[in-house]
Image (tube, rainbow, N blue to C red; front, side, top):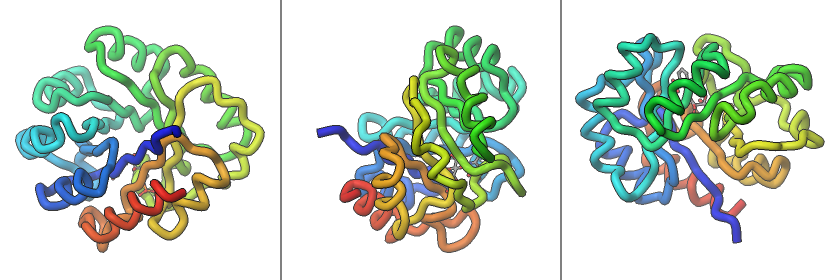
Length: 211
Ligand SMILES: O=C(O)c1ccccc1NCC(=O)[C@H](O)[C@H](O)COP(=O)(O)O
């Protein structure tokens, strides 16, 4: 039976990292992007990274980071995955993937069919596409969903995941509707922006596994 992949994104404290690991998250996201309420500095990120070693894959989340920031973050965190969540080009993603030999994901905001089809330019350049809601106040982490029916007849030719407004209450339905092999949440498991809630994390993971 296929394992449901579950990413809890925007973790920034040891207790909620522990909650995500104990709940069975397969991926844990660390946001290194100053404007985000989930931004984590590299020393703290490195300490959370150590907690996850051998239990879940650490996803370093960057948004249009320059080479120095990208290099420093990779060196400090040594993630299993880098998720680019800005306007990074397929060429940039492929270059980083080749240079550092780390799994690379590209997040894309799905507005309509054309934007979904444009994701094809990343095929072969990244390891996974993450279909998220379009950027609003932030490039991601806005707690808003996109129209999942847009995925109904989309031919997935690469590994992919679903993000945007997923909660313990709707994640099973999202999986049933889309067949998403990976689900990703940030706002939906928080009590306030940037404040992760251990009970919501557990509920999300349980619902996703049951989905
Ligand atoms: O989480 C953030 O604060 C964030 C900020 C800037 C870019 C990306 C960000 N999050 C990336 C993610 O993968 C989120 O989990 C994804 O966008 C879904 O967020 P949400 O709708 O809040 O569940």
